[in-house]
Length: 400
Image (cartoon, rainbow, N blue to C red; front, side, top):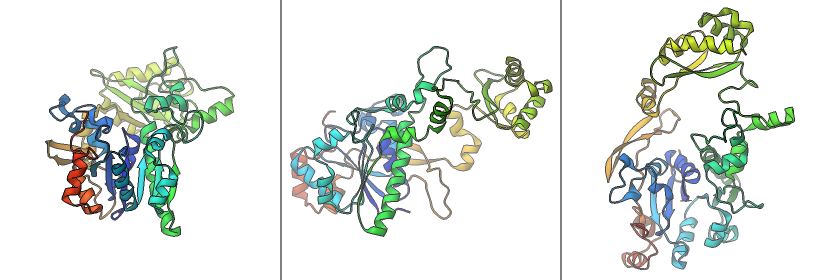
């Protein structure tokens, strides 16, 4: 779908790399640029089989997930020759996507004036943690810090005096990544119409805040900040919670949206008198006793049969092997040159007559150096050899 589009990624961790990977999955050529002495930090995170091996920078599980279908080129942007080559590469590309602080961009000399002079039609997607302006512009940002500043952390937990609880998934990263992919597509569409490049500033803080309208509306309507309420959401739903089922650590989750569904639940658990008493401890006890007598799968099936949204709580491994996941073909096996074949999740899109399956492993460090320097930039063998000799590029991180 995006064949013929080239994107240069100067990203770290999750937000920027994931945005670029979504576009790579849709057919764009994505070239991930890393520095010889500063590889992407997730190359060294959560090793495959808990074994760093002899080349740990090639075994980071997060890196495998976020960099599939990409190419890898190593360029030292602090080196004048490296920066020169990087700007030439941008001039041959459509999109430049990065998620650094403004300070890093300024230190590298990648201001908009320089970028526009090198590549007038280039689309730049900048994804700093807290924006390009304001007192927090150069603050470092990770998932938990963005969660805290957005207001999300203030409502995690159960309101029993315990500290805020970190979300299991650092939502600031993937939410910003989705916006980054959307912004890239929108800017490409605009360029097709007006022929001009664009600079899109997309802060991770703003992205996550835009996904929390209920918290902000409650604060405005009630005139006070909402408090943590665990699994419950009385503002939107009639009733919802997680209940323990028969077996060790088995749970079912359910949501009641309408009064008629509450009546169906009361009848299902054998306590029709609870129809008028849903907010009481007695009502929850009745549901809890009913759930405890069934497996999570039995409980979910019975509730769904009565028109009630319910599902068993699965572990990640259970989800990956579940028949529903297999029917959707969510995971595809892709060979890896230094490791066994790895299962990669597909793009969650089913497009008729088009494959959205991952087909390329996450690239090895500097695996496509010669493709970039010789095929795209036209350097000869001696010039490429000089880049290696001068430390402008490498095929092993120099920190290793």
